Image 1 (cartoon, rainbow, N blue to C red):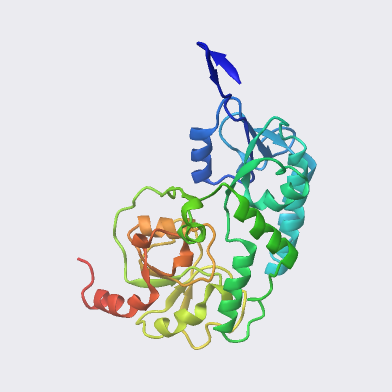
Image 2 (cartoon, one colour):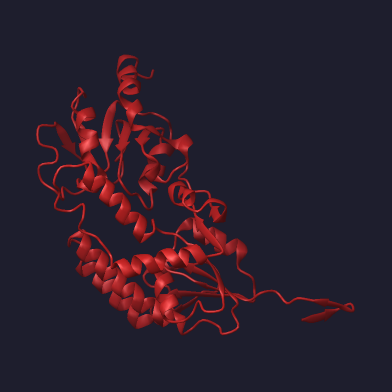
Length: 333
């Protein structure tokens, strides 16, 4: 307690922010919320924000240098491996980074703000004991990912990839329990926020500057071409188009576009040229930056709630046929 003008006053709760890769929404939140007595810990090398994705605002302490370097090298090594291989590598290195950061948490910190990627491993290290905490979400919970992939698998033809990531059930259960104990779940993702009701603190997505609205007449699928992106739901719609479907991303499962006219296109400057609509029924979308860019450019998005955007930004996939047929009959002036 502190004595001020004869009145006993509670000291401000000291906090520690234990963070991972920067999202602009969380960077804005941190810049506005971190108090002078708070601590901000993030990965880095030699006390610096390397790679640049760890460049948080303010006086961040960049720790876990060796674990950060090993994770960076591992991510490069498995970049083109199957989804299951990549995810298992990410989890193993997230654990090493989290345990190293846990050692640097100020013992006086009573409340933590933690990155979801580090949450179970901070608990494993004992860093959550006796403390309240908020969680910054970067993806659906593992148990929810399993559930959504299982649902997608039940609705698609045989796929070599849709079940390729299944984390240890014990890890999924641990994360579920920790998220249930969190004071707040913080996310800009509408689908994730909907899972947590009143405990969810939903941030506004950072949106690109609005581009000149000059949508074209082409229809696109963002890809990659893999079953969990649900190309099976896009195929019957693409079959009705007068021009080939524009397909972005890698072709990770051969045969998913057999019998459908497509045009391959790469992301880069002008990637939205001539595109008037995007079909995006993916089972899971974590960070929809390209969808935000498309909406800002006046492209119509046909999606599902898993896309993460505000419902005002997208229309149901079922609305595409009538709406786009009308657009082709009465193109914009």
